[in-house]
Image (cartoon, rainbow over all chains, first blue to last red; front, side, top):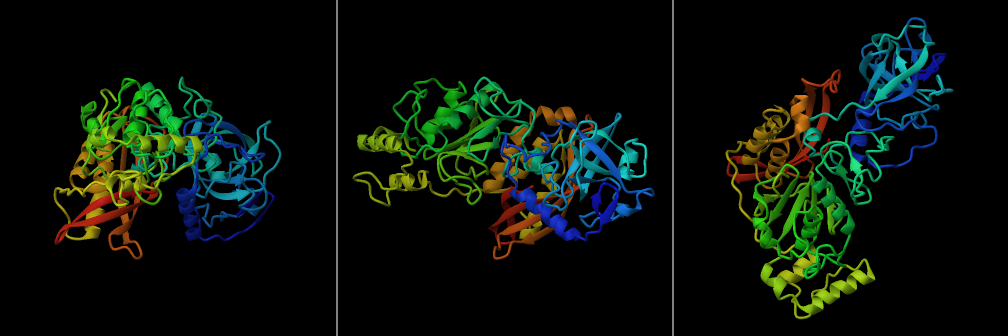
Amino acid sequence: MFVVGGLFAATMTVGVGAALLALLISVLTQGSECGSPAASGEVVLGPPGSGRLVGATEYGGPGDPSSGTIGASGANLLVHPDSYAELGGYTFQTAIAMGGLPYMTPLRITWGGHSAIAYKRDFGLGGGPVDGLPRVIDLWWELAGNLGIPYEDGLWSGPVRIARPPATGAASLLGQTATGAASLLPSPIATEDPAVCGPGSPTGVPLTSGERAQMLPSGLAAAPAGAPLAVKEMIAAGNQIVGKPYLYGGGHGLPLSDIAPAYDCSSSVEHLLYGGGLLPVTFDAASGTLESFGQPGPGRWVTVYANPDHVFMYVAGLRWDTHNAAGPGDGSTGIGWHPLIRSSAGFIARHPARL
Amino acid sequence: MKRSTVIRLPLCLTMAGILCGVLGGCVATVPGPGQRPDSPVAQAQATHEYPSPPVTERAAGGAASASAAVAAFATAYINWDAQTVAGDMRELAAQSIGQARSAMQLAAAQTADDYELQRGGIANSGVVEAVAPLVGRRDQFVVVTRELTTASATTAYQGLQPAWHLAIATVSQAAPGEWVVSGWQPQS
């Protein structure tokens, strides 16, 4: 149903298949511009765990029959009592008080010490502030009841806390989705949490939640907020030279503290390792030398893959390489961060001690 | 890049690089003086990687069909807990080749000491709902799974329903009747 403040409703039939397709498309295409501003009037949700207070209303139930029982997504809300509607405007395109979340986006909703997960299956008309908070969410009456909210025939309003739950599924937990661990987060990912965007670390590198580095649309990388300092500094060093031209032999013969006009595979990897305090400033070697770097095998945070012909590395799960060796979807053709994992056949894996 | 090549690197190539940097945006695809267009250095300049001969990998085991290989791999990939995940990923690495092996090796290394996974007592479980060939690709499959993430020491996942996830798998035939996964690229 199209929820209109609990006063009248316009039933809309949207196929479940179309909703699932929209969800899939949104998951596959959404970006994650750190710090992107929200549209006027929107509440911007932070990363998982960083909730915020918003204005809420309730709808449906015996005292509000005009709201009907079919959500705009096509779902029967009687079968899915854990449902909410995103508010704002008159259509799916304008009901974006929380940024325009895709259907089935889960939110953790907390009221009066009670907490529950609910899924977006509807949208509705917005309205004025609730207790001074922007009115962004309408709670299906059974959901509201599960939270302990008294039923007032669809007329209740008050503040609730909403938060994204953590991303689920093996690929997200292992940081292996193409866009990093935050890929399931509906856009925009802009956040109020100052630890996530902005300098936030001694190196000035952008930070992101989770355990994996995240590639930003600019081609730079955001470091995991909880990563060791050396990892953050390596990512900062990489960001310094993202997009530099490739030149076979480039970057050699210079102190690693310099920013060279061009790099090749080994000089660019060494620039990052130096940035993390893992190589002396005068170190200058070809890729084969890095076959004996550090300790054998992949590392928890950093893995260098070297052979006499090439070297690349992973820093907090994000690949540093000189081209898009993993094929389509692997980012730029140049020196920098690449979102996909490539084959390491024929390479020796090494990692720095304790990383 | 070969070490010996670095030592012999012509000065003009370095100067060309400096000039490229000064001019900005220069992509040097033309080999330096004296370099044949098909020489390894010229190829490196064009592809940004020194050409290496292909390396043969051997996977432990294999499945009788491509779809069976994908289904077995996917099932193991999505069913683990914080205590077993590193070992499970190591096992998957041994059973796969190419990019898939590399991805599983990294996952094993990164989860072996993952404080967040251990502290939260996080586990993932699920079923493979579909394995379907990509149109026009005999070696690539779309894999649809339905997974539930739980945690024994945090309420963060409490109340979340199982969710659909999607991955693209690539297979290779190691021997007649022996299929292994060579690529694994989760999309969600």
